[in-house]
Length: 150
Image 1 (cartoon, rainbow, N blue to C red):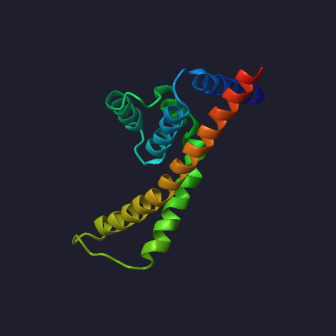
Image 2 (image 1 turned 45 degrees about the vertical axis):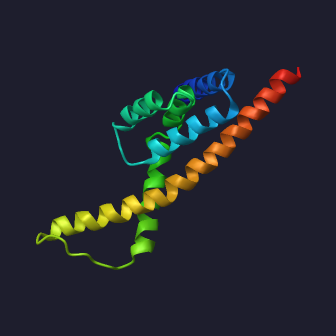
């Protein structure tokens, strides 16, 4: 188990360094990581990679390596607490309001859960993406400053 963890950390560090070594601007790398974070945090399992490919195809200036690195960073282990917090935030926003849309109680319950979860997820994914932009931009600048200083 420890060997697997070391291998995983080594690969993640290697991919991060590859992103830092690209010849694109700091903004491009940070924007790629922020957009990748946003897409990865959204509850779109399995489709997020396809969404990432479409974004990279449309927006040529976004760093594709940073975008996909973000999708690697935001895996099921890091997303589980975020999904839990998403529902709790949605629960705090909507409270005990009940919406009756369908005649079947199960559909109403599914609608309520989904509504609370998705709104809460948006309230989390937007600030996390913005924060990841600034953290990645600072990290890239710091790396380039130390690299070119020597």
